[in-house]
Image (cartoon, rainbow, N blue to C red; front, side):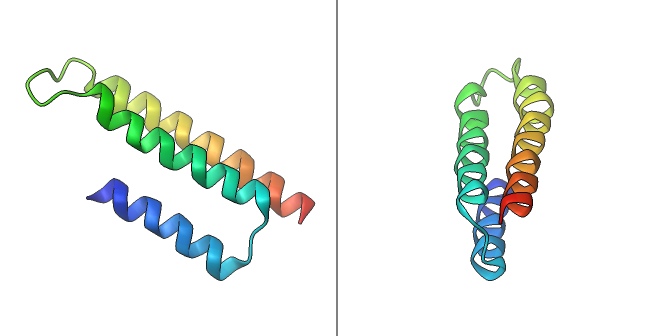
Length: 75
């Protein structure tokens, strides 16, 4: 539920903020990484929880930030 809210929040922020193409590329990658996290963790096998919710969240945040900054610089 929180990942869906996060994805919705970045979409709403993009619509309200009038961001450009780099922002939306970042949104697509960010949302894809959130979905990826759910594909690597299985209900009865939680071995990859750290990979999914620590490493992947960190990477998703950094990648999204890079695209937002690029959009702000170019836009």
